[in-house]
Amino acid sequence: MGGKELEMKLLMVMVTVAAVLLTGAGCRTSTLRATPAYAGQKTSSGKPAAWNLESENWGLYLFNWLPLVSGNPNRPNVGDYDVATDWLNTAYLEKNLREEAARRKAGPVEDFQLSRRSTGMFSLWLIWLRVENLKGVAPVAAPEP
Image (cartoon, rainbow, N blue to C red):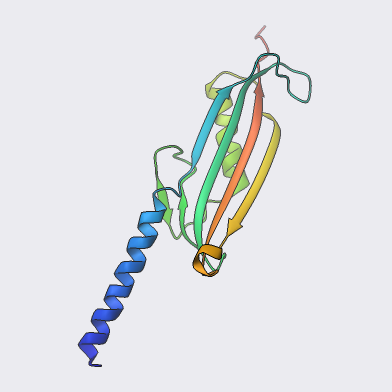
């Protein structure tokens, strides 16, 4: 096999890998959801709930360690992602929930529930999908004096 043929095959492999990563990256974004509390819902501290909040971020990692693509938590719900940046961090998700509660004029977020999952089975453990999800409840804001 000549040098040019090898270069062309290598280029095709690199283009294919890039296309697969970018195709999968569109759904690897940060999301933020707010749903109204159900009737009579209270927080664990007994305050009436106003909003159920949820922030989630996804990412692809090489060998579950090296970040390839992850959603940008500073711009949730717009499909924004960054390459070679690790944005999967609970602090970013918590910041999103607190800012959303403030934007909706609710009280400080309570009752945080964090879940993490990862899988690499779909790629024989080379490329891993990792997801972090944080939920919280924002109570009705106390009336200002």
